[in-house]
Image (cartoon, rainbow, N blue to C red; front, side):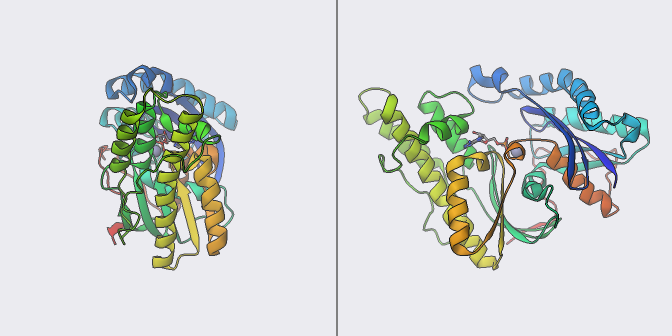
Length: 339
Ligand code: KG4
Ligand code: ZN
């Protein structure tokens, strides 16, 4: 099976991986979290500038870990979108340059398809039909996947993504960026029923999401407090926020599985790292008789292994991309018809 060197630079992680079929031979990630932390969010100009010095050492490290030389690589892949244009260009240009120099194919991969299929990496049966929940800092989507490359969009957020809901409410609580991991940690000792927060669109009857009302409700709740929450109150607030987000994600995912009669549910993206969400999904799936595939923890947040995995499927189907293909900050998911 061909060895693929994949690059992921769509946002604030510089990532390089080498994959062969479902096997990840190396996966290197250099996080820029510390760089963006003082600004409370990702600064696009800083992100693209810092991808550049990181990418060459990461390629060398990935080749070393995989025990391969550049000449052993059969194809080069990079995320083409969605993401920050100036960041996407770095990985894309490097992958195209390597493909050109090594006379090997180049593959432009959709970041969302990488997340979507990440729960199947290393699974002996490969990609199987499923309902897919993608929950990240930029996206909250429910899709019906009939196989690799065949997707129907079932629902998406109308405003903030689930990760944004974590990050923005965490910021209001004075917690560091990114807020998801901080809320997850504090929620473990908090009471999820301590604060009554809205479950946006829980009973809307469709598979759309909305998290902006939660943000406003947290703001009003904080304004009513005599002082910024600390100790147990802070933990209770984190547990209540997390429960409000999880309740909707779990209910809509189960509804999507019922609607499509899917027996497999695949969950991916940075928010799928959340320990409360993983636990609730595990219980709910077992009660509903669903086969739950959670992305492996190391593959939940942005990584290049998921890009290499999708590229391997494309290559096996005889597909590759033109070197003239541009990046697209709003790249739609190929094969995703609105459902
Ligand atoms: O998939 P990802 O790395 O980037 C995007 O493509 O957006 O996701 C990053 C998001 C951030 O919003 C971060 O707060 C969230 O994933 N996240 C978490 C956890 N770990 C990361 N959210 C909740 N609980 C976590 N443990
Ligand atoms: Zn992502």
